[in-house]
Amino acid sequence: MGKKNLVIVESPSKSKTIEKYLGNDYKVVSSKGHIRDLSTKGKYGLGVDTEDHFKPNYTTIKGKKKVIDELKKDVKSSDFVYLATDPDREGEAISWHLYDVLGLTDKNYDRIVFNEITKPAVTEALKHPRKIDQDLVNSQETRRILDRIIGFRLSKFIQSKTDGTSAGRVQSVALKLIVDREREIQAFQKEEYWTITGEFDEFHADLFQYQHKEIEIKTEDEATKILDTLTPTFEIESIEKKKKNKKSKAPFITSTLQQDASNKLGFSAKKTMSLAQKLYEGIELENETVGLISYMRTDSIRLSDEFIKTAYGFIKETYGEEYIGYVKKSAKKENVQDAHEAIRPTSVNRTPESVRAYLSNDEFKLYRMIYYRALASLMKDAKTENTTLILNNHDYQFKATGQIICFDGYLRVYKDYEDTKDTELPNLENKKELESNDITKEQHFTKPKPRYTEAKLIKEMEELGIGRPSTYATILDNIKTRGYVNLEEKKFVPTEIGIEVTDKLQACFDHLINVKYTAKMEEDLDKIADGKIVWYN
Image (cartoon, rainbow, N blue to C red; front, top):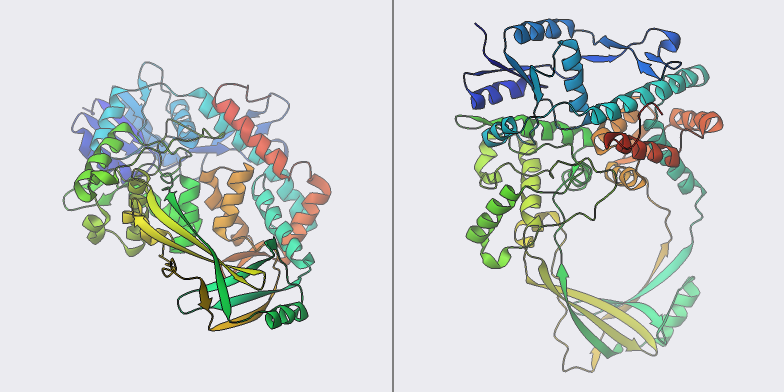
């Protein structure tokens, strides 16, 4: 006699954990990811009938027949099936393929979603079942068809014309950004300029105005003439103090997590997503497996009411009531796949230090950053006092700035991730003049925009609306593994093949490989997901 209820998830590592949560009336099994993909047979090997409403032709992925056969047996011996794949468009599509392949009917299945793998989240999801969201499925299917039609044709073209191996709808636009930036750098004409600095006991001040108008020093002769005019004695012209609030950032979404993990921890986007997947799917603690973070593919900065409530209690108890802040609200961005939450710890009481023994060093670093970012987002602003000192020397104005933190607010937990050093200026209230130790001149040259780091490229792609945060890691990995770019000092440099591939694509397909078209496609995919437009149009 089989168990009454069958729950199908995507990954085997989740199934054991969830089965423990649900007890004996449930059997939890895994599809091990996608089970079907577009065929490579038929006209042009596209797996899409371009003459009949772009109808897709699906085939079982190699090695998945055995998985499907096992799932069919499980379905046969169950009374009811819950499709519990990931809570995004890819997950919705996997559920639809399972529904189709396993011969389910609306009477014997439900779709359930949860943003975290914890007992309360899973049991709550069972109380709110729904059916498959066909609009989300259509959006994913459209993306897959577009990627296949454009990717296949461009790749065949590239293979025939260059030493390149592949091209893609979004991948080739990302590569173009890198190639365009490299060309800007090569074409850049540097210009000389000079700075003059007054050195004092506890600080330095930079020349920025002459007779209260901005000054530019282009040559050494100009700098020398100014130096000859100056004397060691500076008048104090003004001291201005301003109180400022320093706001904490919203909790992480996929793109900001990838950017900060790159900038602050030195992780690639691929490594970040792999570590986050482990933290989400579950870590073996003393006597249980627990998902430590919520789902890591999300565009939403929303936090659940329950998390906010417990976090406020934790902040009050640990740091004091004066540290309780307010919830960050999104100025509703376009392109946001919602019903999701931000990336956050599943329990604010599970501090990084309390789970450190169960995590690898890198898992700990990432969990710690996610944990404190979510906590900081609910804490009070830090308060600073910013001082601007203006000094005068023969009609030349010099400026020095200082900042002290009056109330640390969210920085109490987040100072390791932000540059927040105090730069205090001495108390000069009763002084009219200051003697400098030295006045120096220094030569500089203007610089072009820098090459993209992973973090900067992800930020640029997000701002331009190309690709999805959930696809950035794969895109960046593809252009590296295909030899189109190298990483030099953690910055992308296009290879000869990368430049050649970009130039050939621009010569023949600039209507497809451009930012505007790619961003418009993302907008349309969102509209399909929202049921606003029909996918095959």
